[in-house]
Length: 169
Image 1 (cartoon, rainbow, N blue to C red):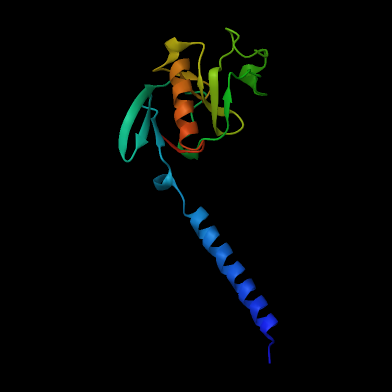
Image 2: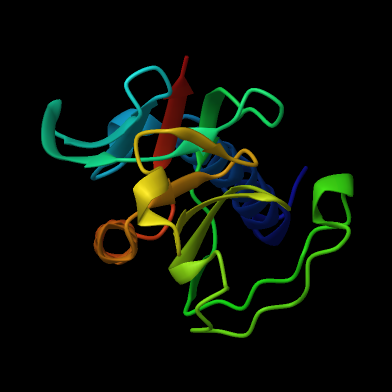
């Protein structure tokens, strides 16, 4: 016959096991519907929409990847946000002769903010070439006017810092 202590230990182990299953289900099922906002990008119209409660609350123009360096499509989540980032050329052929640019430098292509969405090289960021907005001009990133990029980053931070991003052709 089991002692009272053995029964209580059994109950506690069972409760812990059930609790971990409930926690796993709640985190694994969270998705776009649970997020306060979602981001939708159309590469064809070159627009980024912020959607809240099923309605577009703001639309921004973006520059997208050129045909030789397309912006990836699919479902992502925003990641780290770097304010006033430096730019270090990535270890790829197109950047071989480029040089490090410190934060705020006029030649820094990442003006104001950098929002990760597909590490290590794909971001939403401000640009030092605002005339490229609406064009297929980047190396795969989504470029925005610096003030728009900073406003978007503040919206993402206010929504918890990690929001769904869908990029469609």
